[in-house]
Image (tube, rainbow, N blue to C red):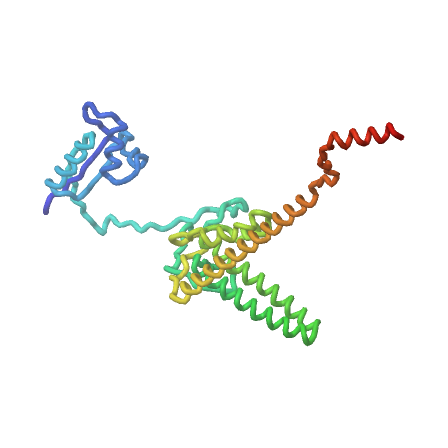
Length: 304
């Protein structure tokens, strides 16, 4: 039978090696963190490696020495098995079982076995969708909303009651579906769906939809489920089309806003010019008087 050896370590350092240096070297050697090697320095013999040949044991010991610690090689005793030594271990039930405490934490598994990709559910707040699918679904929702709005206008021309009822139902359905796909988009980023309420906050609600479209999703499973399926070519086309529509709307709004500002500036300028005071009582130019005329007039006065 071939002999087998083991490496035993008792926490001894080599001469001139500090403990912190040895800990760092061992952590690098065993590919673990520094706290993981602290149990090797308890002062008690610890078997690091078993079932080694003499050559392998020498190599392991040399690696420990290079790390700055001392170890030793010991011969492993052969293991002998005998059926006579087998003792059946019968589990003993306690005399009484303690009642479950209402304050005890739930004993549920921490890790959940998620599938590779999640299932797409349009009409649900459960699950996750990525940025491109969120844009594609938003475009489809807006398109359907415009068609239903046109239908409501046609019904209104026939019956106000029927048209108003249909419009109310369509508006509620539009809001509900928007919340559902928005919740799945936030879940993809690992955020709670309650953050959708930020859309109702002044100022914040003006740019939070942009955040929802820009924030990347989690690379792997998160607490809301596995990652969504990959984007199909149709999803990519719809997402790009929706971005183009949003960019066009933004440009038109900016141009309209600039025209409005220009009109207001021109109106304010004209009002200011009209309010400026004008001096109608201008001084008449002084006409020079001929001295001869003055003399004639004085003589005529004397004659009189």
